[in-house]
Length: 439
Image (cartoon, rainbow, N blue to C red; front, side):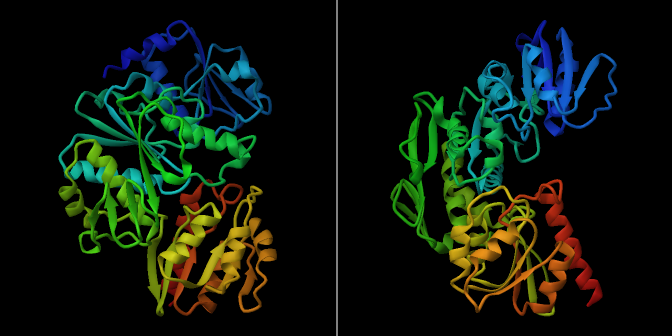
């Protein structure tokens, strides 16, 4: 698709880019190439040093308020809008995801969910490649949705991981949508859980009758104009797994055909949905299953880091909610040491407290700030609870107490301590690597 086809959106308009991270910089590149805006500005909380004299920087405490005077507000994912701007300003918001879905330059498989969306998106992409279907992996996984616009054409399938932020202001949906699950998450970005859930559900809300959504059965009924394929773990649905076999529309795929390096029974759910979505896009199920053993999984997601003195170290830094930490422990049939904690967003840890009180984990090492709340929920006297002031101390303590397996699965966001979960995971791996050197 030619980038000039974006000109009708911006011709003669005063445009402000809200947030200057990866997607914000992609926006600026696009607008400068188009050369059709009446005015371009970049707004960010942090001070801006722009290389382009004709682009106006807006920063500081009131940067959101100054966006109201522009015709179009190009929101970057992660910029907290919440109730900080007026409904009139929200109506001006446009995202790369919305433009991609509006133009539909190729077939699009959109994938969202609180947990599992990166793994599932990558699996679908892997399956399509194995079937020699022209494809690309874009979106929340690290590639702004429009960055590869000029490579999109009929016959190409774009697998687009979509976050709640990218879907919040969407008014179009992909031809094939995947809605894996919805748990309380990112509540600091939304007025309440319902607003967060509504953003996720936008992935299917605007589908037409020729479209399809693969949706977690627990989230039904679902507002959509497309066909619904129900998906589940542990109970029958159109697409489901019992934790051993996978069932697609009544047909069983037995365990011996599901050869995977992914850890955890919950990943069988992700595999089942990915197989179904890829098949919907034209992939052969047999070819997908043949390619499955080659899929290595993603960094910071139940990642085996090292075995040191008989102790296995697992990096699950992607974990930002209680359910993810529980799944991590269950994925390895237990751990004698679990590292938890991070930014405290006020989410409930009751389900995690109940899980830890069963004694499935012998030692729990807790990081600030949410670790303090988790500590109060652990009442089983047989569970050793240790508070550590930082990751360095946590790894040191774990190395002295663990006998079999240490899992970093924070059940909390990284912000305030790290730039993102990747930086947190990289720090953890570096510290574990230092243990290897020391030993």
